Amino acid sequence: MKITFIGGGNMATAIIAGLVKQPGHAIRVVEPDSAKRQILGEQYGVEALAGLPDSFSSDDVVLLAVKPQSLKEVCLALAPRLGGALLISIAAGVGIEALSRWLSGSSRIVRVMPNTPAMVGKGVSGLYAGDVLSEDDRAAAGAIMSAVGRVVWLQDEAGIDDITCISGSGPAYVFYFIESMIEAAMETGFDEAEARCLVLATFDGAVELARQSNVPVATLRQNVMSKGGTTERAIARFEADGVKTAIKAGAVDCRVRSVELGHELSKD
Ligand SMILES: NC(=O)C1=CN([C@@H]2O[C@H](COP(=O)(O)OP(=O)(O)OC[C@H]3O[C@@H](n4cnc5c(N)ncnc54)[C@H](O)[C@@H]3O)[C@@H](O)[C@H]2O)C=CC1
Ligand SMILES: O=C(O)[C@@H]1CCC=N1
Image (cartoon, rainbow, N blue to C red; front, side, top):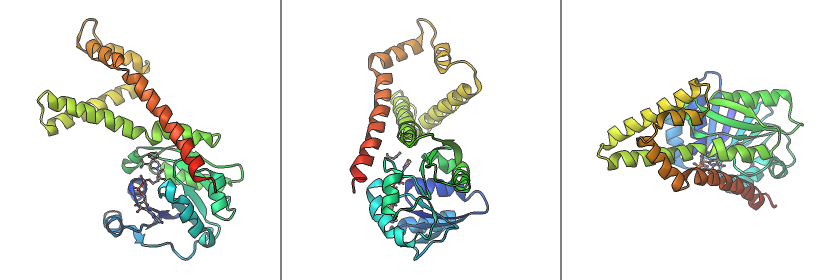
């Protein structure tokens, strides 16, 4: 497949890093920042361009990976060059209706909400396309994203907002928890390398145990909590401080922001 990324930042780099491990893709990236172009060329062997190619054809896949705030400007510049290419947008918030409008009515559009673990082949991507998209185009978008992790097709476009606040933004929530645990370990006296090693091994083991168990995650937690023991004291503090409530509220706020971004940026 011929895939041109527009924007070579964090998320594009994560997808490219995963994709280049598979043979058979011709990958280009358009990125105005020369330092990023150099890294993308040197580390991943992709062709890195400073500006948009003059034209695309219907065999091309164009993957929009710029910030939502740059999307309109980029789409307006792309519109006369698109040549019927399949367009994939990974931007949060902005819907197919606005993308199509900015792309002079193109309807070969898929929205994808990926996440950065794509970089190590463990991404999760939510995909949505309207009924007008052909089966071949669905298969092409699905193949690109399944090269870097799991793919979930969503029934309606609001599902993109739903998945954004779980798996799209979710790695940041997990990294926040990991950061907090590393700080706690260092405050108890471990050096940074030891703290990192202990905490990552704990996450790794806990996730693997949850994956392999067929009991609820809450039961796995209770299995660690001896009555009158140490863990019980820690979880009591989390509950008293509203940690679970805050995590759920954060996810709700994240979804609200996704919808808000769409409204803010799609008006004209
Ligand atoms: N970072 C993440 O975990 C995720 C990001 N996304 C979406 O991916 C998109 C990109 O996000 P990030 O990679 O985090 O941002 P980023 O800021 O790291 O990357 C955006 C890149 O676009 C480049 N750029 C700016 N104007 C451009 C133009 N006119 N033509 C070509 N490139 C241009 C910038 O130089 C930058 O390297 C956003 O729309 C975001 O909503 C979606 C899922 C997860
Ligand atoms: O924070 C953001 O807006 C993007 C979308 C999902 C993850 N990062």
